[in-house]
Image (cartoon, rainbow, N blue to C red; front, side, top):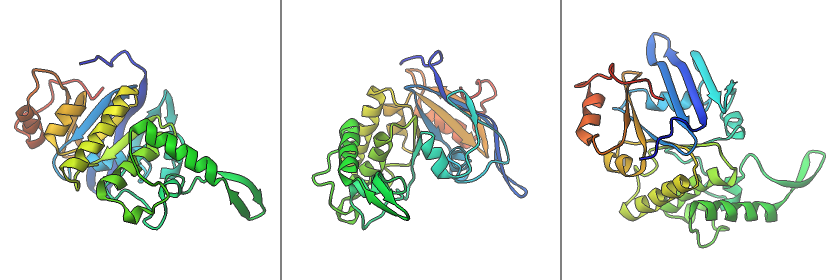
Length: 262
C-alpha cells in the first residue's frame, strides 16, 4: 500500500459543521485527501456521510468550517461553482437528462459554443463529441453509440456516463455516492474498473459506499462517520479487517486513539 502522506493535499476540511436548527448533522469534520489517493467514507444511515459531501460540493451551505482546495480556502455558492473549480460528483440519482445523448449530458450547463449572436449561440457539437470521446477513453468507458439518448442505455452505461463526465473536464477530485448500489454484478465490475483506471492515472477519489468488499478492493483508506462525527481514520492494509470497520460504524469501538482523517 502506497503512503500518500507526503503527496500534495488536494482537498482539506477543517471543523466542517452543518446544523439544521437543533439537529447537528455534521460536527467538526477534519479531513484530507492527497493526490492519487482513494478514500472511502463509510457509516450507518444518517451518520453524516452525505451531509459531508453536500457541504464540499455546495449543494448546501455549511454552518461553519473551512474547505481548502489545492491550498486555497474556498467558498462555493453553488454546485456549479464547485464543479467549475474541479470537484466532480456522481450522485446516486446520476443527474442525467434522459432525452439527451452522451455529449449533451456531459456538457449540460457548460456547452461549447462556436460564437454568440446576442441571446443566441451556435453550439460546437464537433468539439463536444471529441471531448466526450476523450473522456470515455480516459476512463475506459465503452459506449457503442454516443449519440444515443441516455434513456436507451442500461443502468451500468448510465452510471459510466456520469463517471466519464468527471474525466472530460479534468477534475481535481471525483466524489462518488454509492455508484454501484443499484447495479448488477457485471455492471458493478465495469464501474469498479473505471475506478481502477482513475487510480492508475493518479486521480483522487472519494467513494461513499456500504459495500465492504468493494472498499477493501479499491480504496487506500476508510474514514468512518458516526452520529455526525468522524470516529475513525483507517488505513487499508493487511492488519485491518472488515469486522474492525463494522465495530467503528456500530460504536462497539471508538476512534479516540486514531488521528484525524488526514
